[in-house]
Length: 166
Length: 186
Image 1 (cartoon, rainbow over the protein chains, first blue to last red):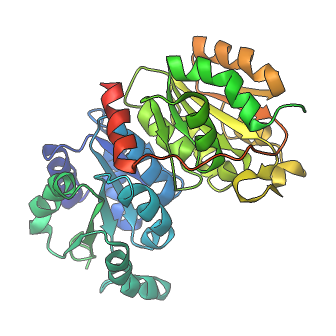
Image 2: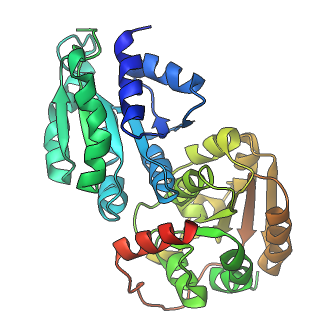
């Protein structure tokens, strides 16, 4: 178990997060295992990122503070739902996005979507903040509060170095 | 089949709207529910086709009140993974009403695969949902009443004919729909 995942979960919860949905990535493996055992939050694995966004939207409507954790490849599949659900209804959903295809990546096919991730988020209008240092975990946690202020989905892009796997 | 979705919703709205939180599907289903019986407890999903079931499940996980997602055959086919999630994480207070008219109604009644060989109830059962019911026309009313009295998650595949009356878009701002719905839960 790698400490940054435990610290990240603690910081997200400290900032109010109490509902989580995930779609797997190897960088998110420890976080997903922690969530599966965490009885203090509601946790629902999703089959696909749009579904996770829908679950988080419902959780927010029901009064919870939702987080979706997903790989950056999911940013490609989730675009229309970000527009017509997350942004259209001004839903504060924190997106913890593992940024594959960054230095440390061993799989070439991850690189093209890696390069496109920030331009896509710019185009959609989702504020994002990129972190490469596990010491920044408190800043990542604060995005839960920032999503409430921004009244929209907000994303953290977390590369191999952040997860200590660079 | 003598009912369309409109006649079905007209039968079911008094049961749903007075007793449950309702997430209604993009396009004509939301317009029809709005016209039949508007309520602060209706969340009109105006975009994000396929996500009515997911939004409803997310709400159901936060409350003890009954929650009904109105979904369609075409839209659930866009998010079939949701049935597996409901099969594993569905809550007792959750009902998925799949209005199955075998057609993409809001775009001109092009046929969906459920008008061919595909059986949504079979998919739902295989996804791990135990309480799956298939109804036709007016038969949905008694089944919905029964589902609201018993522990779910429930899936009702309500078979009706394609076709929709001509209605207008819902004249409400999305922020208003959101805030009104959230205040009604408190």
